[in-house]
Amino acid sequence: MEFDQHKPIYLQIADSICERILTGQWPEGDRIPSVRECGVSLEVNPNTVARSYDELSQDGIIHNKRGIGYFVSPGARGIIRERQRGSFISEELKEVFRKMDILGITIEEIVSLYRKHSRQQQ
Image (cartoon, rainbow, N blue to C red):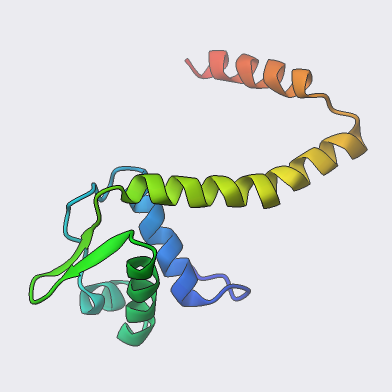
């Protein structure tokens, strides 16, 4: 994993875990790597990983079963999806619409281009 120097590493690790949960790589109820395993695979200090896990635990995305490890919580995908949808709408989509306005691009053009592109992919 390559880290962005403009965002704390523990948040980048948390984002990566959330992405794996959303894509189904780590389904709800499944065990995830231990703090130590994750630290070794990412080549980061286990304390950094622990901070990521604490953050995700507080959000209800993962939970710790004492002596067994960390697991993806039931409903984690919904929690992540809601959080990321809000962020997407308030940050990324806002910027997209600003650019569209500046460039004179309509929503209809975007939809048309998307449909054309998705047909070519099939």
